[in-house]
Amino acid sequence: MLIDRDDIILWRRHYLRTIKRLSDEGRPIYYLDESWVNAGHTRSYVWVEDTINSSKQAFLSGLSTGSKGPSGNGKRLITAHIGSKTGFVEGCLWTFESKKSGDYHDEMCAETFEKWLQDVLPQLQENAVIVLDNAPYHSRRKEKVPNANSNKHEISEWLKSITIDFEDDMLKKELLDIVKNHVTEQRTMNTQ
Image 1 (tube, rainbow, N blue to C red):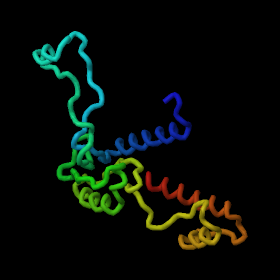
Image 2: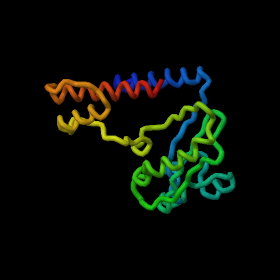
Image 3: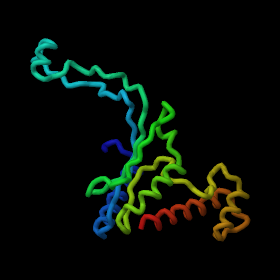
């Protein structure tokens, strides 16, 4: 924490204040995450007992002589679950076998995540809050918000489509500032 950037510190403080406020309001808070495990997953280190001098002595003492498991290769399972202070939500475990060997995030997509989440939502208490990380498949925009790579015409058309007024002679940078302010305002409204 001593080397955290100021924006990370501010984000963390905002998060903690928001969670406290929601908790004080009596809203049930659920935490959602996903992970993976390989069939041959083992720890890469072991504790060492320096009073044991032989494998026979280790065996007689009920200790192992180190990790003998496979390298971590093999089938990969991807799993997601959601829980709260009362435990995991029954019937919401999602596990499937990975078809790829790279980063498991590559195999998750917004469509499959949303399908799973639609089954989860009816299992949650009313007025629930779900806390999740910013994995790309946890959110997707139905519309493309203009960015610095957009041209002035694209930005103008987007602003018109959501009925935000602007002057025709504005610079691209000015239009992007309007877009940024609108997106920030929408996010603020969604967290209240």
